Length: 299
Image (cartoon, rainbow, N blue to C red):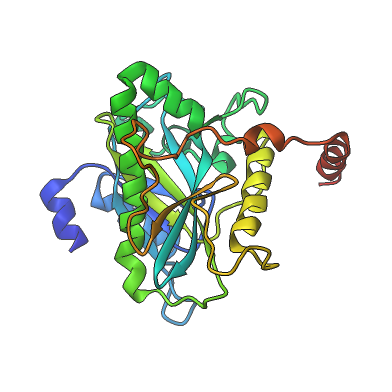
């Protein structure tokens, strides 16, 4: 089926190993011969050896929205505390990850990971990479940027569509998901925005990385995890059956059906990228800073 689709539509495609993370093993191709070359040198093994690694092929979105000439995608955190009924909590904060190299669709640049992959694990090896400059924006800053460039209405529609994309993806898998009533799932959604301000779901990470690449990253993830523990209520401090619409940085967006958040019409259809007071309060203490420096020096 893939070969037929490729021959019919052509274009650029991207291959991803399903068992790896942080951009490892990903490559782009625009000719079937490139897959044959890759297969001979990477994963194709004789029958008496370990089975070949499984890859996923996706059509590459080759017209991404650019800022400063550079490609980026969004990492969004989604908490599911139940699949029956489906209950979704969306974290307000997240980040946009940028490449360090200006975007190009030239044939000679198809193999340049620093142009096409936004993973920090990839970008930190790019020539001239400066960790102090940072390769991330907060989603709140991105939303403000979009509102300033395209207007409030277009920005709101974009982020509302991102929220709907998340809900629909979980509704699609709900019938096949089995979850213990005491369990929960934290997903890391990777979303790309194209030049038409249309969001595309790139992938859903069942075990999103929680390591920090900078102070802002550390602050966001610590706050997100602390709020997660409040939502799942392991110590059962909340009144039984009570579920708040907003807890810390999490907003309930689906509870067996759409959640009506506002009694009156509003120009803010989703809280994704809205102000999160946890961002201002979750700062490293001097003790934490000393610990981080010690851990870095010993690694």
